[in-house]
Image (tube, rainbow, N blue to C red):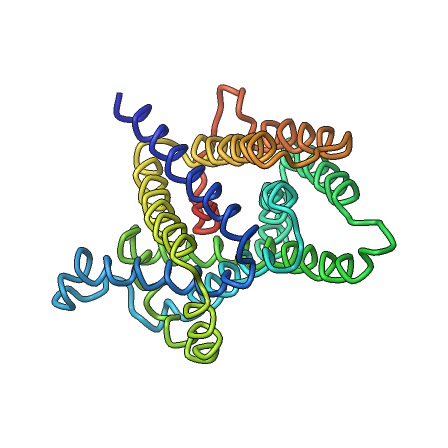
Amino acid sequence: MGVSRTTLNVFVGCCSSAFLMEILMARRPSSANLVTFLQFFFITLYGFVATTKFGTVGPKIPLKQYLMLVTLFFITTVANNYVYALHVPSTLHMIIRSASSPASMLVYCCVKKQMPKLTNAIGSILISAGVALAMYGGAPTDEENKGTFLYWCIGVTILLATLITGAFTGLQQERLYSQYGKHPNEMLFYTHAIPLPAFLGISSQLMDTSSDLPMDAWVLVALNIISQFYCTHSVHDLATKETSVTVTFILTLRKFVSLLISTIVFKNNLNIYHVVGTLLVAVGTCVYFDFFSARRRQRPVSIKTKSN
């Protein structure tokens, strides 16, 4: 009962967050940085009250150990939200982010100097092929969209780069957990609180964007922040009840549900490349995590799996 309820919470929270973000980016793509800042601020405010008890509870992990993790997490999160302003469709955004498995395998093999399992290698090839097809099918090709195509290329390049930074984020998180123990709520707080001063560099842009947003957009922003917060905590709760393999599989299914909702509600045109690419990503994910095998090996859940 508990696990099924938590799984439902993940789907409701994360799908709602992705749905609201797509509406907001369709209307106000320039508000991506503002939404990111407010998400960081809200989670920090909650963590200051609930986790640190107004600063009276110190961190279990030394603050200096968070620096590399925070840098990687901040870059990955900001970049993932920023690409919405670069004409990358939400459908393609979700498909590319589903390719985190081969990126993690590549980084893990390079850092640990270990060869991947056969299922990991086959699954990575299928996922990579699916993403490549989806990218090919989603690229704007009309002559009048040459400027859009340039921004699209930059956005896709950023998304592919965040797969690597996200993989390094997972490795760093794994190192801290193994060395200091698992403190997910503390890590959630400090990974959002420490980077907040970095937003001072774009404070003028944030002020201009906030002053330009109409009331209906503010309602969407508020709902997105709440749903993203609910999504993040539901994923943390699920990770305490299921193996990381099951968690990752559930989150991948959630992305495909979001993709389906996006296609139906926003009438996004999915061509044959999108369909085949999506199927390859789904099959590749099952193969990669050896989901239907009786033998499942526990893997740590990374921060990157907790975004919409």
